[in-house]
Image 1: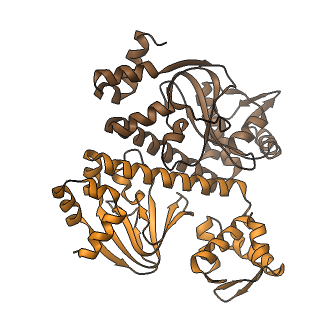
Image 2: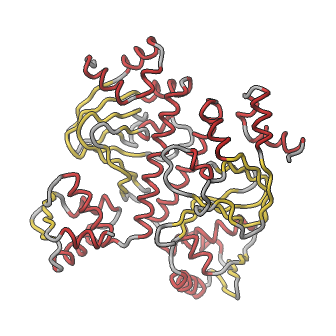
Image 3: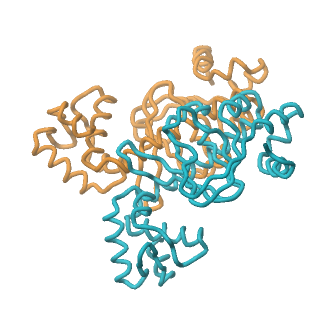
Length: 226
Length: 226
């Protein structure tokens, strides 16, 4: 399933692996799945009866989001090359009662340690448990940052921050995305986004064209996002 | 510092204690501090240079909140009798980068395991670590619930939910609290709260008097909060 290069890669990014005895390590490596996902595919869905497990992003880009009961999506964080998602193993994390959905924003190559296997490992190995704990804490901190954004910034500021983040992710001033996509990311209605983008265009800060947003005045956009 | 009754109490509420060897257990119990706080006092403040540690509420009521950079407060959860706060030991939780502030809403009696001591214990003891992990996960889930409320419900709904919660906490239909207090809890301006409360009064759902809010139509209030 995985080759020698993959093993070296996993040892580098899963520090608890090297602390396991050889048999245990072999069992973990035997359990790892490697899968490619295409842009737009959902990796972890609340509609699954079972959750996925520990997801390691070898390459690509995933969006982790939370879906409210009334169908709004809130983007919690993004996973880029070498990032690891623990909340996709929520079923084996005691007391995590919410579900995070992962969606491939770019074609992605992932490693997966299945949930049941991961759960067993963290019960008996203190290093794996510590690793899980640190990942949960990291995501918790990111979610608190998102909450602060939601509470403290108005929608105009949040759109500015979002466009700036996207511009960094895409390393481009021209973003290919619909107003609907922005609305989903920020948990609001498309109409709200379109209205604010139109204002920003009138102020000469961005330029809108079919399916694209071009950042014209970066310093001004940064100022709004602050 | 603590008496025999306290030791029995702590053993009951800190399950990892009974798994420690006798020397270790003795050291934990020797480190425990017992303190009384009066209503309105802050237990854990971001202005402290060091954080407090694991807080166990023997009796009373604490509010755990987060303060945004622009000074808005968001109530994250409440701690009642026998509840335990781990985020007050955030300095020894790797990757927790935010600060939770604890405030006594009622006169409270607390046990505290100081942060440094708690940090050392969770590094070497898998049961204490597991206990910490489960508490962090539990708080994480509660915070996600708060975030869902913020995103999905409008302020009228959130005020209704808040009044209902308070009514349960106080076991009374008459709540003694200012509009300012509600505003702080929900991270908004006092004017917004006053306006919505006035509407609710006009609809015959609540009755306002000096420093008090009386719930007149409980079923209607529940309907709004839904």
